[in-house]
Image (tube, rainbow, N blue to C red; front, side):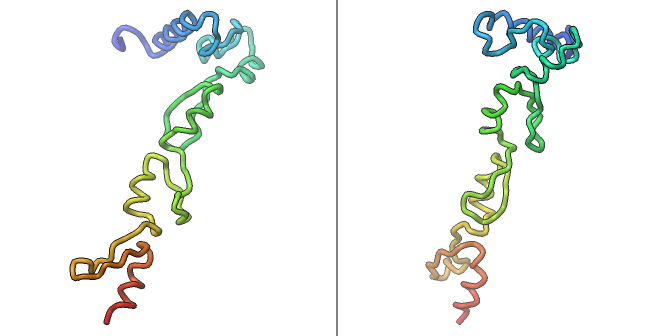
Length: 143
């Protein structure tokens, strides 16, 4: 389809399809025909900037670093609640802030407060300490 239509034409067709599918419910598009967000984004139809500013279907970029999603204001909160690029505090409380899509790696391999087995477990030490305390543990039991 990309070889037949420009990006602008594909976007216009998509908007028309959405308006047809969502004809009476107005869950996916604006009911105001003069609203620029219900037309092409660069449309200056009737200079309705006030409609565009207040329209819940105006496209806004995701504010999270590296996320390239463009979403309507109406669904921006839902996207933010599940965006993989949203930076969150470590659930273990180490003080680090990590993107949601990297949290599992952080908690299991990088967090200073994760539980870590003593490196000397191969020779009989059964201690489980926080990763940040492994050096102290080794120094205390270096006898």
